[in-house]
Length: 202
Image (cartoon, rainbow, N blue to C red; front, side, top):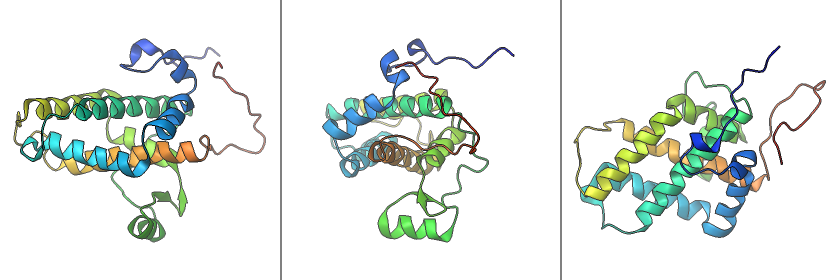
């Protein structure tokens, strides 16, 4: 039977090289080892989304805005590679914040995103691309950056209530990649009879 699964190529992304597509850990390691930590990065995301959605709250046109937008888009692309290469299924209810009460308490008291009590980047990535496609995430980020650059809202109701979900998903995605960084990779459930073989070129 012919394998019809499309291979991901650098030309399909804005910022990813073939090297990172083949091994997303290259980018993840570099970002969290040499660029920033999860606390500062989460604050940068929050400020960018707030300022982009409502430019009147922006404190000025700092060059960090362009850098942060670039990195967020790059992380969305890295997550998309993981989503596709790991064969993660879409989530039926991506807006469901917590699976169990324990997950709520982990978030409320420890600021930890868990699924059935355990940190699970797979679930965070699944929900991210179940809420919007890669193409729609590109547009969302472009719209935020455009409004921030112009220092005015192009449409007062452009995002509406969705801005809450957009910010939450971006922050959760950052945590997903950070968990992958801390765990030195992503864990996938496989049946006991399966043979493990890498299909990605080194």
